[in-house]
Length: 116
Length: 114
Image 1: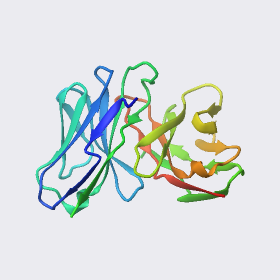
Image 2 (image 1 turned 90 degrees about the horizontal axis):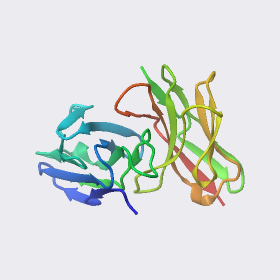
Image 3 (image 1 turned 180 degrees about the vertical axis):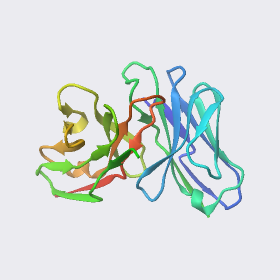
């Protein structure tokens, strides 16, 4: 069964529109959470990470922001999308859960965002 | 600066032949080392990791990786490739320290031909 969920799976948005992507994790408490962007099916860029509710660290200054309103929920947002925001957005978690290591990041299924 | 290098953009292998995907790293201390696989339009799947101990680590789907401290390498291997192994492979390093922030290589695309 899926432990980490992302939605939507795909999204097509016009330039200048707002964005909200959601990531939730099941079955664990106080996980570290991460947002990555993957452009052109290649390398991963760490965007944000969070070690707890309301605690967000930004890795790259940009048009995006992140929030963690609940322990197992991580949201990626933008007020106005740019063409360069297109990509594959991945959420990942690290935490304690039976069958999962506490030193390994586990990734969600991703959201494909196309900005037109 | 800390970095991970995957020197090959693509590796081509015939089905049934052994495969190697290379990874070298430049990180101080004793980092943890990981391999992930990504199929098209999917998230990354954890394959295996090295923390300490035996230099040969076995993981999912018949993959293994060999840690070489002197060469700071962590090459991914499989004795007999399958067409279904075709995917994008990422090497990653977790430096000593907090927050589990991984450093990823750029990825290597593996193409296994029938």
